[in-house]
Every structure is written in structure tokens, then in C-alpha cells.
Image 1: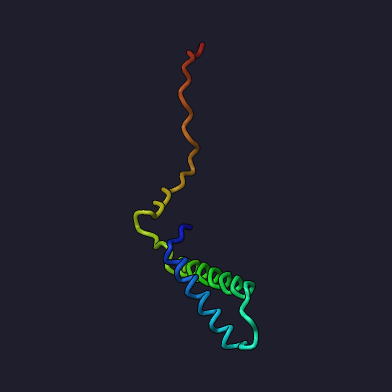
Image 2: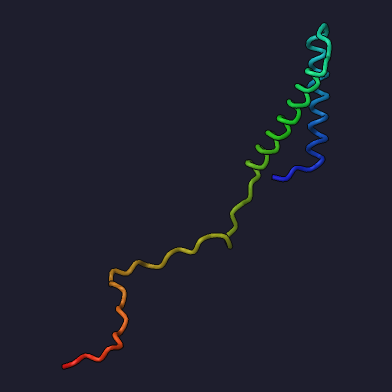
Length: 90
């Protein structure tokens, strides 16, 4: 699966949103490198999961040209044997 820079930009935006929400929820906790890394990881995981869900929901639609043609009727007769090239002695 190929991801574009747009996905990375949305992941960074979500990481910032997660950081802001964390700082409003826990105002007494100092934002350190660990919290920033956690927010960045959550942003990337959120974007990747949204992209996977979106691809699953809007997957390729089967077209009529890709359909497998139906098999012909099954014959009960055994296949024909090839003619022998040897001459038979009478």
C-alpha cells in the first residue's frame, strides 16, 4: 500500500490535536518528549487505520469483464481414445 505526503500531513495534524487535547485534559502534567512521541504515534496509527478502513469500504468493484465465464455442460461420455498407429494382424 502506497501512502502519500497528504497522509503524513494529516498524521501530524492529528498528533497536534492529540497534544492539545492532552494539555487541556491534564493541565498539571508537563508535556515532555515521551508525550510528544505518544501523540505522534497515535496520529500515525489513527491515519493508517482510517486509510485502511476507507480502502476496505471503497474497494475495487467487480466489473462484468472480470467475471469468470460459466463452465460448459459436463459430459458423461468418456473422452475419445486416440487412434492407434500400429497395424493389427488378422
